[in-house]
Structure formats: C-alpha cells, structure tokens
Image 1: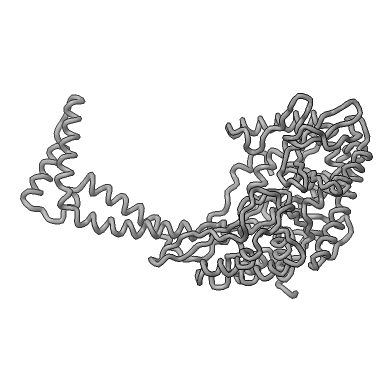
Image 2 (image 1 turned 180 degrees about the vertical axis):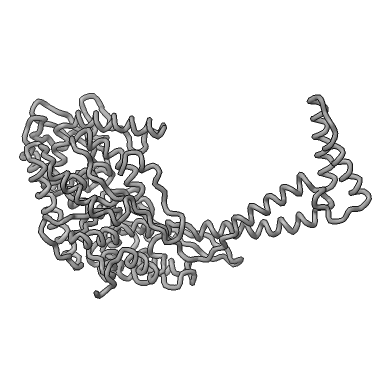
Length: 540
C-alpha cells in the first residue's frame, strides 16, 4: 500500500459492499512478494538472525495456537509445514460489527487459496471499553431508537486478559434481554445461536473475552472456517517474541529517535495537533526512556508504560508510576540477548505482564511471523506510521498488507427518498418565508396590493446604502404581511417535514454499520461472509 493512500480509506457506504485494498484477487502475488522480500532480509536481533528467528516465531506461535484450541475443545486446523504462506489478522475479543468479523473469513479464504494457514490474534492485552452493546428498538410510532443492553457490570478499563465476568446472572440473561429489545426487527438474529455457545464456556473460564472468542471460533468452525487462533498475551510470553522485545530494549535510544521523528512527520503531513494521535511520542524521564511496550502486575491489572534505564552492562525495567525497578536484565546494545530472554521468560511466574502495543504488534507479526497481514481501516491508518518506523529502524521496505472492511445493515427498513424529500420540504418552507407572493392561495384585494407593492419595491432603483437598506426592510415587511396567506400551505409542509425528519432519523439508525454481529440475521451473515469469500459451505 502506498504511503499516502491510507487516509483516503473510507468504510463502504452501501449495504453489503466490501472494501479490499488491494483487491482480494491480488493477495497471492502480494504474499509472494512479501515472502521474497523477507527471505532476503538478514537482520541481527541481538544475536539471533532474522531468518532463524522467523522460523522460531512461526513454530512457537502455531504450537501455541494448537494448544489453545485443544484446551477449549475447538477444532484444530491441519497445519502444513512452516514453508506455506501464513495469513494473519487480529482484533479484540468483543462483540464487534460484521465489518471487523469479515477479516476472519477473508483470512481463511486467502490461506485456502494459497494452500497456507490462516491465523487470528485474540488481542486480549487491549482494554475492555464497554460492557454493553447498542440495540435498535421499534417505537410505538414506527420509529427506531437505540437502547444500551449490558452483558456485565462495568469494572473500568481493564485488559481483556485480566477481566472476569462480574455478574453471572446479568451475563446469563443478556441474550434474552437483547431479544426483548430487538423484538421481531430481525427475523433470525445470531444472538439466538451465539449466546448459548458463550454460556457453554462458563465452566472453562471466567474470562469474558475468552468466552466471546471461544464461542465465535466455534461458530466459525461450524461454518467451515478453521483458522488457527491464539491470544496475543500467549504470544508475548514466547521465546521468539522476547528476542524481538529484547532487541528493541537494547537499541531503545535509536528506536525512540526513529519512532518520534516518524511520528512528527506523520502529524505534519496530516496537520494533526493532538499529542496523542495516532499515538503519543515515546517519552524520556531523566535517565529513563519509555519503551514501546505495556507492563502491569496481575494483582493490579492497569496498563502502564514500560521504562528502561541503561546501565554499563545491564538495564533496569520499571513500570510507569513506580519508583523501583522490577527487573535488572543482562542486556546492552552490544550484548547477546539470550540471557535476557531467559529472565524475561520468568515474568509470568511473577505475575508480571510484558505486552506489546498496537504498532509493535503489527511490526512483530509482519516481520517475524506472517507472510500477509490483513488490517481493518483503523489498523491500516496506524500502520502508515508503522511502515515509516520499519523502514528507519529495521532497514527493510515493509511487507505489504491488505486492508479489508465491509458494511452490513440490519435490514430494518428504509425510505431511500427520505433525505431528498426532507431537503425539498426545507427549500419549500424557506421559499414561503422569502417569496410568499408566489404561493398565496387566495388573491384578495388586500393581498393583491401587497404583492404589487413588493414587485414595485424589487423593481425600484437604489443609489445609496441607506436606500438599499430601506428597500430591504420594506420587502421584509411586505413578506411578513403576506404570511397569513400562506399559513395553510406552511402547516401542511411542516407536518410533512416532521414526518420526514422522523424518517431520516430512522434511516440513520437503520443504516448504522456498527451494530454487533450478534444482532444480524444468521442466514444473511452466513450467506455474505461465507459466500462472498468463496469458502465451501458447512459440511463440505
């Protein structure tokens, strides 16, 4: 994808429309180009060359995916040897809209077409930002309004990997309550099939995100989609990932410079003033430098920035907001990372989470794991910045990625002419105000005199500002006097205007593309997501 193209990406506006950049048919040559490019790349990750590290990362992540799926009793895809193409995507384990979910189906189809492997990251190190979904509800007058329906009590912005269901009763009744709000607006909402699959996972895990992810993956399997899948938290605890992380820590001053300079250019290019968009700059506090990772303790699951202080032959690590280091690593710019990796592998036993951030997630996935990464629109815009950092730090032209999204409406009924008719009514009402003489229904002698006086005022010549002002005031006075003759027409138009405002408002609610996938018709989701990707039907 070209450097300047991502900010022109827009979600499709039509129901059922798919955005794919580049087109799905071009994915195979893009993947082949990435494989060739990465095959020529010879980069030193603190004592481990990129060619060896890529094989290690792929092997460990795919084994972790098999273990995860087996533990949950989900179907384990038949993995081919590590030389086949690996197509990767990922998202938070939440009740997202179909435009996000479509990536999983595309990854499966692309991997199948290339005789490769599809892999989905469950991004459980990200924050849970809402405990409810928005559900459209029909009102008595035939309009639509939106209700929030909670699936659990809100406990604040916690990482998914440390978020347990708090109110099991509220959680269990979620499907029933969604159905009560949705009523018959959707004939066969997926919630009827999906929520029992979620509840089935209660005995296996209290983690909310894992319940959602396991139910979704089980449903995908029944529809013929058999991607490998793994929580990102598990990836961050693999040896291969920790070699990647150790190199960034050892060379942190250079990484900070490349990162912050690329960020400054990005903000200048798009005239962004916010210091937090798309990401904050990596900071420095005296001898301590901020690294592109999160860290927190399992006993206090609040994400904090990771800070690093380089000593002569070692480095200290501490969490933002804490005074004392939690670890001293045998790591420096000129030291091999093997001993540091061994120590980092012990962090889970200490209930310390070292996790990647969004930009470093895709750097790792694109450079050391996959052959093609599939982004949504938001991720693609982030990775325009990521591409610049990859060029500057890793000395490689970044592997290309694919951007994918889809728009699906719930099928709540639309009046496609509503907006156009409302605009016409607004113009007509304005014309009644400023040109009532054109619409007077009954020309009495009095109204005829007013109309004649207005025509004379319009035709009169003026030479000075004072005369122009006097003519303007006279025309306004005559328009106001003529209003009584058009009031019946105005009443009719205003009544229709009110109806059209309601229609347009209903259309806005009906056309919202971000309703959770569980609200959509199961039949249509299967037809569009499976059928449009050319996947075999269930059971084939």
